Image (cartoon, rainbow, N blue to C red):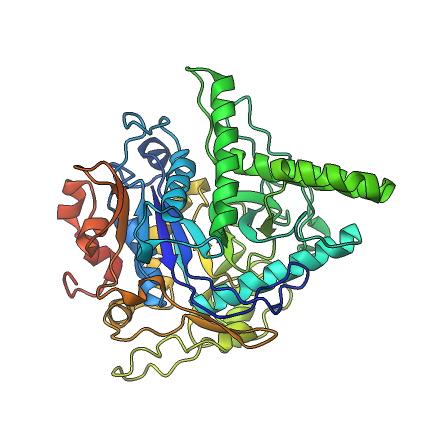
Length: 514
């Protein structure tokens, strides 16, 4: 199941050209940002030590994703594929994670069409962020996310200009950012091609792990992140819809090749395959461009439609941090606590800490407990609270993805939950944002001429509640409907819910239901 996290980005900022990501004189409005939360199929979830029951249903794990977002001031999510059985439903595709592809694409198509109500419709340049639903926690506010997204694209487009000797935004650019992980592991099927050797090198320093950096045969432990992880995406709605459409075409082709008895190993291989094809096309374009620019230009434009999807990876892991193959690289630490940072660094074998205080983009955002004005003793800065930090690369990500699975590490979704900075104040933080009676920008970013203001998607709603995307039972048309916390948070296994109510696990404050 995917929960699509929808934020409105209403601004009068001028359009950002591709080469330097700075506004030009053309004014354009961006209306919404989306965050998608994807649930695994029941079969795959059980294999990875998730709680038993229908994975495309309510759960405390889904609730933690939502609660972490709301506590930071993000709008509540739109959840797609809600209670969908991909084995029996008309749109079903079988018992795997492939519903992430079809469900998200269906939502993006509906939300940009005239079938959706005008106040829920998305524009082509609105932003969408998509996260796996079971195991991704947000730890930094929207202002940091948005600032890093635009700067990451700016750096990537400059690299393209340097590498190719020219920059043509109509031909190639980066607008979509996908999570990057260390390992490139082929799925368990005979058709997926991840192009592990064809994709770009990581932008992290070539000695970030010392002598062993990128050393083969060490189970990816010291490999710089450069491979697709399909747990997190962010980009403009129009580009994302086009990219997901291409991924679905590839999925359909692969399923046809496998035949009725075949099964794809998962969605990650398909996303990686399309990214790899883009990078191979870019390499060919570079070679042809230098051989004969004039005659190759028309051919480049024709082939661009099939292969160029404006996709790049979050090599620095500033936005998204998958923990697979990086199980011991980071921990929750207060960045201004010198001794704590040094201790955690030495545990990894680092002679001295690479962390030197709080990054500027974090320190310039509102302080973590700014909304809790009535609470005493909460005048803390971002340097005083524990943030998940990679001690090797110095990444302090916006979102932490608990996809580490070896040695039972999926259990961190329980054992690490109260190590996040918002404990023991998660409940008041959530309530403060839910009960805000005014809408304020999520972020105000500098532009070449003026400022970019980003507003929440649900700013006009009286209740900031999760929204479920699905078909109306009577009309059979797609609709969005509100859902209460109990609807999305309770354990779908009733026996387990009776043993421990969802709010006892999520809030851990012995104060009962919200």
